[in-house]
Length: 100
Image: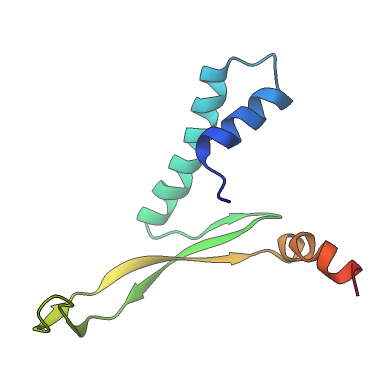
């Protein structure tokens, strides 16, 4: 099961009922926009306790069109690399480690 933005927004509304939903949505959009803007400028983005994002370039390469098998050139492009924090890793493995 995936978690989508609307579910995050609903959880924020439950945790902060005094804030209007519209303001919570603006705050959530602001966080996402700042991550995107930072990365688009070539900066690394670190959120303590969660992880860090950075831009990594993929090299141009030769590929094939799956429909007809013709060779095509796939250009160089930017990709986002995410590395989780040690705290994040501990939290997602907490139940797994306690079962042993």
